[in-house]
Length: 123
Image (cartoon, rainbow, N blue to C red):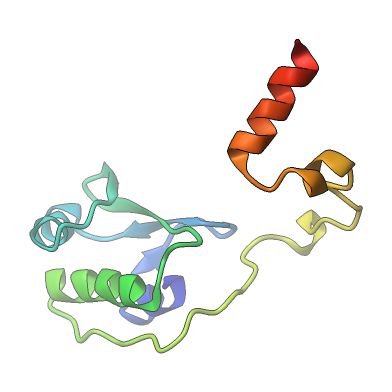
C-alpha cells in the first residue's frame, strides 16, 4: 500500500515502519471520501494521515484505501493484485536470537488457556 500511494504521488513520511504509515495528503478531502466509504483513518493534522494495517488486512482492503485516496485527490487508482511482505525497517533491527522458547508458549495455544495458566501459577 505504501508503494502504491507513493505511485499516486503521495509522500509517505516515516522511513521505517512496521504496520503504520504516515501519508501527506489533504486530510479534509480524504476524510470526506473515507467516511462515505465507512473507512476510518487517523488525521494527525490537516495534511497528514495515519494508516494502520494488520494480519486481517486483505487485498480488497488495500485497494479500497488506494481508491479512497485516488478519488479524493482526483487521481487514477491503481490496483494491487497481491499483498507482499517487505521489511521497511533497518536490517540491524531483525531478530537473530531465539525467542518464545519456553514450554508455556508451546503448551497453551489460546488466550483463555494462557490466562488460566497465569491465574493458577499466581495463586
